[in-house]
Image (tube, rainbow, N blue to C red; front, side, top):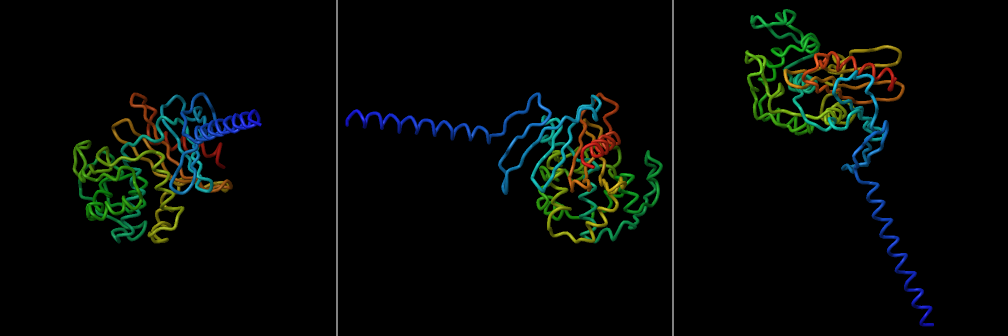
Amino acid sequence: MKKFFIILSLGILTFSLTACSNDEDENNINTVNSVTNSKEVNIEASTEHSEEVIIEKDFSKFFENINGTAVFYNPSNNNFDVYNTELYNVQASPCSSFKVVSTLIGLEKGLLQDENTKLGYDGTNYLREEINKDLTLEEAFKLSAVWYYKKFIDEISPEDMQEELNYLNYGNKDISKWNGGDINPLPQLNGFWLESSLKISPKEQTQVLYKIFGQDNKYLDRSKEILKNIMLVYDEDNLKIYGKTGAGYEDNSWFVGMVESNQGTYYFAIRLSDLNNEEATSPKAREIAIEIIKNNYK
């Protein structure tokens, strides 16, 4: 009988040790791991509401040896398709990709009425001749006319702007350098969103876009519809692509937006970070995004 209890005790101890080992392995599986040498790897990470999954994608052929990253967010399953995980969470200046948010805020504050809202040209001889005239909102957005945006953004109080960026959880939400630095020779061409205090990562860009267009929020449907219409860059064969470029003098070129197709709606951000590569421009980021979408999300 004594021998029986000894054997039974050893069996229980062995089972307990095995159970602890399995629990530890399961915890390790659910831990975010680095991704190496894989075209598609799931990385699970805990979020506030559900498990988000980072899936590494090999989009290298679209980047053509340009260093950069691509993030495509599918909110229906909380998946992030990511090319180059070393960059997707790195914050950088949004530059003119911030026009998505500032346009929305301008419409909400009544500073802009619609896509035809015209602001007067101040007579300054800007290097880009096409912006040396009165511009409508749609023209200013598509031409990325900084003076137009600086003009109405300065009519928004810093307190109101801070409230909006906090609501959207926009990157580091830092507007402390309201007038920006001296990256451009004219004050009309500088601001906190232009290689200054405000920073955001590609992943955060996709989440902000989803909060604007994919979730119930405080913004008027009319404001969102006007913004969406002027963001449209491609509409063909049941595929619509909306976006905005952005670029600065530093190591930073963007194209951010969303795609609507038979596969559903994805929110995306392309960022190129290749200072010595003349091909690393915002038009190239836009080209890369469109080609990735046509080949993977149509």
